[in-house]
Structures are given as C-alpha cells and as structure tokens.
Length: 270
Image (tube, rainbow, N blue to C red):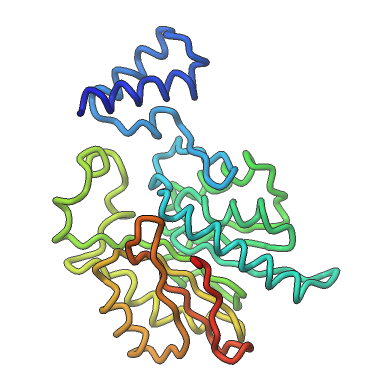
C-alpha cells in the first residue's frame, strides 16, 4: 500500500511540476517523497477552488474538507451580494487564522464585490499571504494582510468571518498521518487536550466583530460538535447551523448574528 501511494505521488509530482520529465531536479524531489515529505510541499502548490495556492513557506496544506465548505459559502455570498449590491457596495470579509490564505483568496477570486482582511499570528506567513494574493491576480486595494493574534489587530466589523483554526485534540494525535506530524506546522494543527483552546476565545469575541446579519463560518473536528454547541449557548449566540462535510462528518458551524431573515440560516451543504 505504501509503495503504491508513493508511486502515485511520483507520477503526480512529475506531471504537475516537471512536465513528465525525469530530470536531476525531479530525482531530488522524488527522494524527498521517499523520505516522507508531503507531496504538496514537494510540488510547491495546490489548487483550491481554481486558485493556485503557493506553499513555499510551509503553511498548513489546504484540505478538501475546507474547500468543500468554502465553495458553498461562496454560493451563499453571491446570493447575499446580488440582494445588497450597489455600485459602491463591498462585502467585508475576515479570513482569520489565514495561513496560506486559501479561503480569502478564493473569495476574492470568485466574489468581485468582496474585500478581505487576512489575519495571521505567524509573522513568517504574512509574506506567504501576499504572495498568494499576487499569484492569483488580486488587486492590492481589495485586501489587507494583518499581523494579529486572534482579534488583537482587528478593528471594525465584517459581513463574514471565516475561521479554520487549529482544532486537533492532543488525544487524537495518533489518528494524524505521520507526514502531517513531521512536516506541517504543529501550531496550525493542535489546540490543547480537547482541541478547543483556540476556538473558546475565538467564539467569546467573534460576535463583537460582526455587522447585524453577519455570518461566522467555523471549521472544527467532528467529535467537538457537542462542546461547541455548549460554547455557543455560553456566549449567547442565538442562531447557528451545523453542517457535515463531503465525508458525512460534522465539520462546520455557520453562526449568524441578529439575522434579518427571521433566524433562518442559509443551508450551505444542502
């Protein structure tokens, strides 16, 4: 099984990066794969909703589960934009825990009337965010890159807050692939004993940064659903909806603050 997987990754690597040619440079990359480095890092980029996301500074690799719900969020944003759009209307969006910037870049690419603030704690990744915006042809006036520990560097309110925080519980470490543990940034993966060390303070503050009728999209680990629902009640949120991913696991909660449609949330996974 392991040999078959590596063989598939080699073919993918050669096709994506080396034009099918087994050059000396390609052989060096194959050696990295054989040592266990993640194929996406070796290739150097991934596709995310039609955007080319550079991974040269080793941010967390975008996951298919994230791509799945972001695509549906974009569909909902398009509907909202068509109802509210005027000549000068801008859909203000915050990509919290931005990492590679895949979420915000996809929104900017597919929603012409959106503007995005990328918020990232790791100073090293600020240039990664700018690089990915540039590589995808995003105008500088449509986004800002903010160095922010959670909401520390954030001012103002947003129509949408998207958050894919670290959420893996230390107790579930054994279920994480070896290549992920070895090569991906630990601080973007793990969040304490129960995986909620970041989500708790996020939820305690996030509603203060939403406009009336604004929405939060928060990714989490499936076993955390009950605890997150308790946190939503504790922090006095009123309207939310849990959604499953493409693998039928609980993966996302959509929260809306003072919805103007009578509390009926959009169904992004329907």
